[in-house]
Image (cartoon, rainbow, N blue to C red; front, side, top):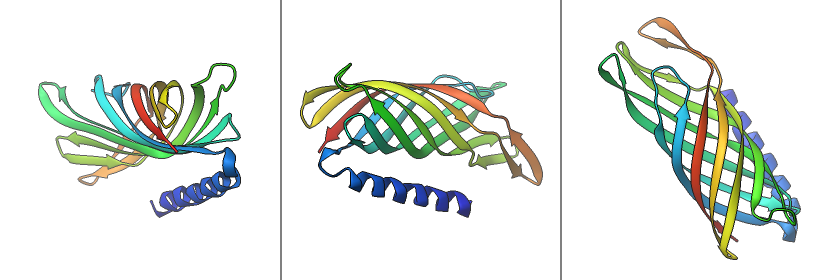
Length: 186
């Protein structure tokens, strides 16, 4: 677990250094998103998802940033309601189609997740690696404000955990995310 936090801070420091070298060409943003997530995990269904975004566009087309997404829902498994939640956080890189399709972008994300699944024996908590791709569009209403849409495909890595002395393996699973976003640019 310490290694994951150390890697996250090291990557964050790298992106901060890269961001400062872009000087006047960078355009930073912070924002939020909300929408739906469709996980392909066992005993799960469509669910709401929300999150935060921050980053900067570098040299017009390229961008780096960070993301946080969270989803929490009770699922009915064999007639019993059980909690199934996940939080994803990490870093992203993006390519923006300036002068071709202004506002359109594609990118990739890499980070970690915290998955919590309520089982009969108790609460199973795992921290798998998460990665994926996304695409979207930002429509600028003002120079400093945009509304957008984003779609993405994320994969949760396999992870083993222990609950009541029993080792449980959560298999790798994927999800589709569809979100609307609000970003403030500066």
